[in-house]
Structures are given as C-alpha cells and as structure tokens.
Length: 175
Image 1 (spheres, rainbow, N blue to C red):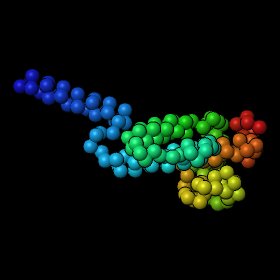
Image 2 (cartoon, helix red, strand yellow):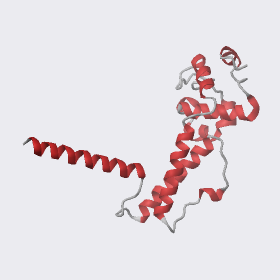
Image 3 (cartoon, rainbow, N blue to C red):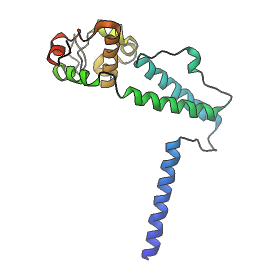
C-alpha cells in the first residue's frame, strides 16, 4: 500500500516536472497547427512592439516581420524576444527616483483632474510623452505603474529632467 502511494507520488512529481520544463523551453508540441503557431508569433510580435514603444526603443520595420514560411521558428523567435522585452520593461532606469516622486504625489490610480496617476501627469504631458497610451487606454490613472514610469522616463530623456515635479523632486534630492 505504501509502495503504491510512493510510486504514485513519484509519477505525479515527474509529470509536473516534465510539464514545467516543456513550458519553460516554450517548444511547441508537434500537434499544434502551423496557423496556431503563426497567430501566437504575431501576438508575441505585437506585444514586443508595444513594449519597445513604451520603453522608447526604435527598430526598423523589418525587425517586426514574422516569417510565415517557418511557423515554429517564428514562434520561438518572437516568444524569446517578448520575454527579453518584458524583463527589460520591469526595471525602468530611474525606478527608485520615480518611486520617490510617487511617494509624495498620489495613488497610481488617482483620477483627480487636472493631474492623473501616481506621477500626477496633466493632459499636455500625457499627450506629449504617452500619446499612444492616452489614445488607447485613457488617462494615466488607467495605466499600469510601469507604463506611467516609462512615460515619465520618456520626458526625462527628452530633456525635461525631473522639473515637471519641482517640489517632490527637491524632496527626493533630484533637483
């Protein structure tokens, strides 16, 4: 009785381990249709392009082509690029500075006009540095904290520095 339950537990562990290894490698199973692989590759490419746009990264249009002749290769390529873009997007260059400014500004979902979100962005600021987010998701209170930080990072890179937040930037020692 004990031996049977031990073998059953061992078999369950091996099944879970092999399933997690297969998903970690992201190798599509052979029974997945080429059209499904192409749809997944297209979705990964679109998500990667959005992440790049959010981070202010630009690539030529040919970078975003999906090879429809080789669906499995296209899926593997774009799922890898998406994972790398997601990892890069998780750590904005001035993360600690943005968190300090946020501490004195407002909640990430603060809808109080005329300033929105955790970094208190006004319409002009949102339109200038996050126009495509403003058009697709609405005001900054509907954006994720990372999206708000990346839009602020775009303003910083454009030469605005931390001056759109004069009082809180001084409290954080940034000005």
